[in-house]
View 1 (cartoon, rainbow, N blue to C red):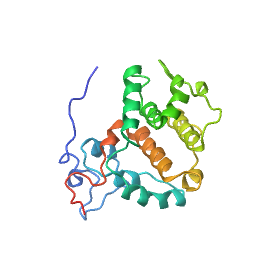
View 2: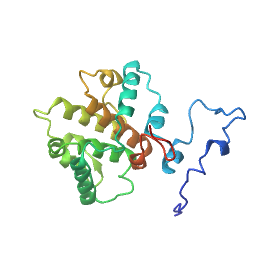
View 3: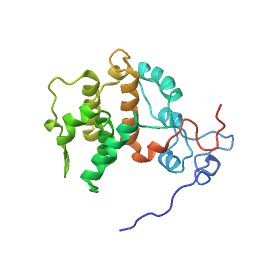
View 4: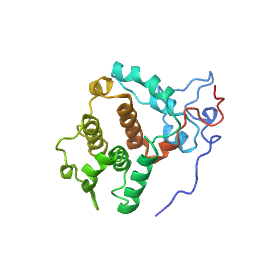
Length: 205
């Protein structure tokens, strides 16, 4: 088995060295094909990563600027959210086939609150997540949204629709933030949690 020890730096992923970089300064691709490498190098902002994902729903796209503007350089809802996920992760341990980006994304949203974790903790098993073991009686709308999002991240089926995500009356700004952050984790892994509002070296206004 080969374990990669090389870590990308900002210089390594500078656009001027990219094979897709055109002489006039444009990219030959409609979106950067090396987002994961730029995340690893901490050479891309939270907003740039979000805009690299195509959201065909206009209502969802309209919510992105507010989400980016209010990004506090942290993916966590609060300190308790971080503690809950870390404790659960430590208790469950690491299983290579199980601990996929989708698994971590589901864990991220399901540990957002004590109540949601208490309803879904039994779902986390040695070989994966069994969502049928969740306690759904009397669940709140916010928790139900996160539960459905977790199913989507882990199974790539069902989940919260784009129309629902775009509806501010149904999905609050806080829930929207958690679902979108979970989507980023499912796509790029836990490495996205280092993303800041401004990428390394940018001048902050």
